[in-house]
Image (cartoon, rainbow, N blue to C red; front, top):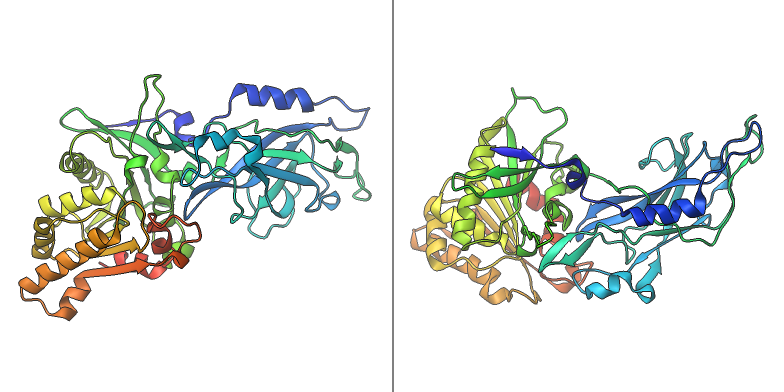
Amino acid sequence: MSTRLTSARARGVAVGAAAAVSLLAVTSASAGAAGQPESGIRNVIPITEILSYGQKVTAVAVEYAADVNPRTLDLDTFTVSDSLYNFRFNPIADLTDPAKRGDRTVTAIYTNDTPSLEPDQQSDRGRYVIIELDPMDPGGSTVIAWNGGVKVNPDLQTRVVQNADVRAQAGNGQGNGPLLAKASATELTPTQPAVNLLYDDFTFERFMTASGTDVPYAFWVPEDYDPAQQYPVVVILPGQGQGLLPNAAGEDNEGVQVASDIPATAWLQEEWTGTDEDVIVLAVQNRRVGSATQQSELMVELVTWFTGQYSIDPDRIYASTVSYGSTLAWAALTNHPGLFDGVLLTGGFAASQAQADAIAASGTPVWITHGTGDHLLRVTTTGQASFNRIWNAYMALGKTPAQATALVKYTEYPLAAFYEPDQHLAAAPTYEDSSILRWLLAQ
C-alpha cells in the first residue's frame, strides 16, 4: 500500500516563524495616502533549482503591495547573499557563520505576476520582482549534513537587501510611479517556503512492504500521462547519506534523494536527456536497515508494485545509482535477473565475482562510471574492478570483445570533469553527458 505525505513534507522546505516575524516587523505594510498603493515588501521567496551537485537557490522573488515599475530596476537594485556552506566540503558550523557568507551574482531582474522564472527574462506586469542569480556562484546550497546523512535545510540562509527605492507602476504609464519601498540596509529573510522547481513536481509517498517495512519514495509522471501509452521508468537508487534518517524528535530527511544531486530530475528535462520522450521516475529512499541484499529486496518489492500502478513498458525498466545505491542494484541484478533492462552505476561499490557472473549470465547491459580521484571509493577496487569482473565473465561465456563491449561499458572521469571538486559524485559528469542517458533509454 502507499500513503501520501503531508504537503509540508512534499514541498521539502519550511520557513521558521521567527524569520517571518523578523521580516514583517521591518517591512510591515502601511496604508499610503489617498489613491496611493500600500507600501513595503510583503514576502521574500527563494526559488531553487537542482543542479549537478544538488539543489541550490538560483533566484529570489520579492513581493510588493502593488505592481512594480520595472523601469526603476537594475542589477544593482538588490544585493542577495547566502551561506557559502557546502555539505560536501564544509563543517555544518559554517552554515550560520557570518564570516562564511558571500554575495551572489545577480544576472537578471524583472517583474512577474507570480513567484516564477521567465525564460526570456523579460518583465510581465506584476507585484513580484524576480532576482535571478548565477547558479555557478558559491553559496546557496539547500542540502545540509544532518544526523549522519543529509537533508534539505528547513531554514535557508538567503538574505536580500533592497539598495534602491522600488516604485509602483505609474498610473498614466509615464514616470516612476508611487514609492512602494524605500531603500534600506536591512537584511530580509525568507518569509515563505521556497518555490522548488521540479522538486515540487514530485509526489512523495511511502510503500508498505509485505514484511511491514514502509519504504519512502518519490515519483514523477508526465503531466499529460496517458494510460493508453507505455512509458519507460528510471528507478533512482541514491547514496547512503540520502537514506531515511529519523531522529528521536520525530524529524527526518524524507525526500532528500530528489534534491541532493541531479539524477532524479534530469529525466524530466530534454536539455539533460537529449530526447523529448516522457520518462516516469521513481526515486527510492533506502531505509538503511539490514544488509544490502535485504535493502534490495525491499526496493524490488516497491518497484514491482509501482510498475503495476502505471502504464510502464515491461521491457524498459531501468535503474540509475549513486554511490551506495550500487549495492542494491548489484543484488537485484543477481537475485532478480530480468527486472532491470539496463543499469547506470555512478561512483559505486564493487560487484563481487559472483554478482559479475550472474550479470553476465543474464546479459543485462550496464554502464559503470567513476571518478579517478574518488576519495571515498578507490577506483581500482570499485569501478575498475566491477568492469573487469563483468567483462571477464562475458569472455568466460564465449562472448567476443565486441559483444562484451555492447553489454558492459566503463567511463572514468579525471578531476577536470568535475566543476565542484567532489570526485566521488561521478553522477555529475555522467549526467552532463546526455549520450549516456540516451544509451540507457535505448536498452
